[in-house]
Image 1: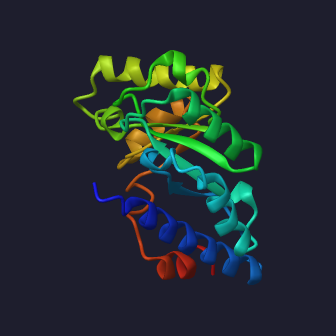
Image 2: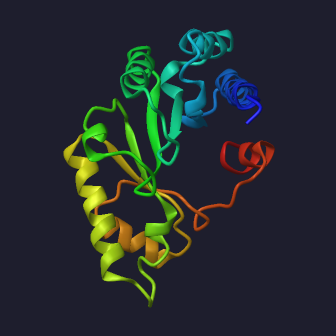
Length: 197
């Protein structure tokens, strides 16, 4: 509410870029990292240049930064939002929509958004592969996966916590799955030593 989200977003982006630059220098494998982009910032006329300047100051390839918008956040000026996202894509950044299926995005807007990845909300994954699996949840998540593929997006399912969920999501055609089954959030030092050593 006080506007400090822009500063927080920039701090996180700088930390991500510093980590990527360090790993690059050490010759470690690099993977894209998602960084939140608050919709409240989209009216900032310096936003695109500011984000680009931060990433470039660390010498990080733009394709390693995935700006993630939360679907549940509303934004009144759709055309402006689309132009900002298109410019970020044109500069080589990746764009994801987070929590898809829980917010305000219309399907017609989705067809116009220049996104790389559609992230299905955890609420749809919770009952998948479980004893209490609901047919309705299965229909929705199967439809989201099919929709993402038809529109040329990568589909990512959030919140998988069991092998049964992983297997079920794979059977449904989901390309990328994240969740506690693989790892809970960990400090960057632990990630570095555990996965990049």
